[in-house]
Image (tube, rainbow, N blue to C red; front, side, top):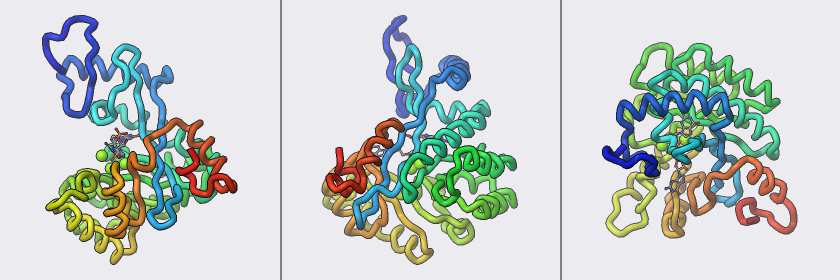
Length: 286
Ligand code: C2E
Ligand code: MG
Ligand code: MG
Ligand code: MG
């Protein structure tokens, strides 16, 4: 964060600003406290079928409201939680919370939960997933785990067997932020993903003239289709982006154009309206 800020001056933390060592130590301590004192909560962003335009699920996204600093972006505090090992406990809590909330939604509606590489590397993770599902009485097929390409960096047999164990449980697997990391196609060959999430950096501005993004999206979609995987385009904000993404054949869309992340109570209220004569298409109901 910026040096020389006056005492009491409100500083907004975003992904663009990195926390210095002192900030990190303080934030780590505050994060520990937030975990036990209800300072964290989960919000849910709709994922919509591009064909039916109905909500097929929601992505669970972690939020931290700091008592002094206000909202802190997960792009700032999740890396701190990863470095300090706190992500294990936090990730478990997100998983259990998301499963419990999703158990109240209609049967066809899924929940997607982000899994950090540290969680993924823990041999006890599948047991945590089973326990979260059982505790919430949620069918495994309604849980989708989002994993980023970085899990393949520490590749060993552990990664392969983790995928196999998770598939045995029956949860769905999504490859998050596709195209931003190392993007080796090798792991698409062996990892049993059900879905590829196309990073928002390809979606944003894709509709602008001369943009190469639409060619890239098109290639990812045809690759995914050939492998039998769904695709979610992340971060569609404008009607032009939406039109283009649908035309390029992405099976699902997640972006502000359809809805921002919302608290669990609002999801529940919206879902209760779905299917009633007044509002046949979920997101159009509000
Ligand atoms: P992600 O998993 O790729 O999540 C999608 C991010 O894109 C979310 O940011 C979401 O709010 C944002 N987004 C969706 N649609 C739009 C749009 O139309 N426009 C714009 N500008 N943004 C959009 P968020 O909630 O800030 O989360 C950022 C990242 O933090 C996530 O990226 C994920 O990597 C991480 N994260 C969030 N929650 C968790 C969690 O529970 N566990 C872990 N390990 N990581 C998490
Ligand atoms: Mg995600
Ligand atoms: Mg993503
Ligand atoms: Mg991301």
